[in-house]
Length: 326
Image 1 (cartoon, one colour):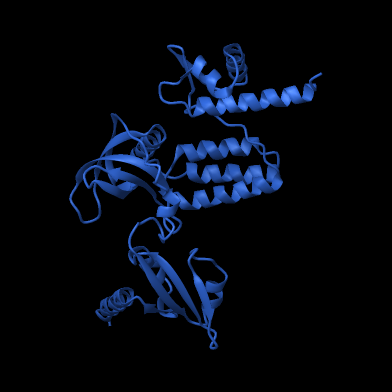
Image 2: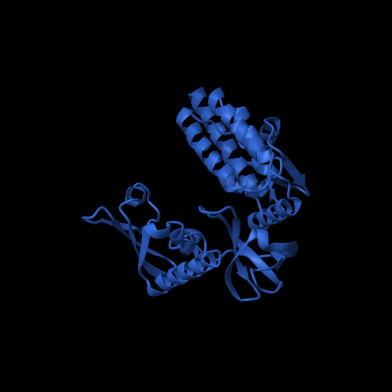
């Protein structure tokens, strides 16, 4: 005799599996026959499970005998314990710090998380975060571009963009979005994409896209593409030749340098005078330059020469600017 609790657990697992299949269905959806084959059950079971998911509020659509989930209205069920809820709150707090735009999707996500959290203290702070983002000035163009790129990334659909890089003319490009990334130091969303104009991978900042249009053309992301490997050496998001960085920090700021892991490649050496040397290997010097400059006279660039020369030139120009007022 089959244990009833086992049957219930088995059905729950089957429904979760079907829900996952439907959510990740191709744009045209899956047929009942295809779902039955993928899930290892008969068609009658699939029909019953489709009804069960619909009754549970899962937004299933059907067209010409094909099924899928409406991603725009889908809300996953997540159960969190107290410590997991706090971890999620930390992530939400970072998100509110990071995003300088009014993003309605962040607002609704935080509102729904607040409504679903059992601990009222954390839920209250989550709701306050939603209010902070809600109060930011609306930017419909930004939201539209983000939504379009998100859809293109999820559905693997080509996009035509008009892009204006700093101090460069406007260009039109057809891109295949492979990955969306946020950077840790400044607000901004980037899309890593295959750029047909350059016949290579390029990184585009969302705020610099002046127009975006979905194309009726699909693409495949190469199996060899690994965004995490590509970004491993980046200080933020740029993919450039790896450079060995050697910085010396004064005793005044050395404790602050020691207490943070700035990059996975870092190696820290303490000196007898209380200073410390930080060794890093990062992609190029452009992105790390601003961080180095932020330490002012408390950091000395020992390598590479091009970063050292850039900082010296910056210091000279800064001094010249202020000498004009003396």
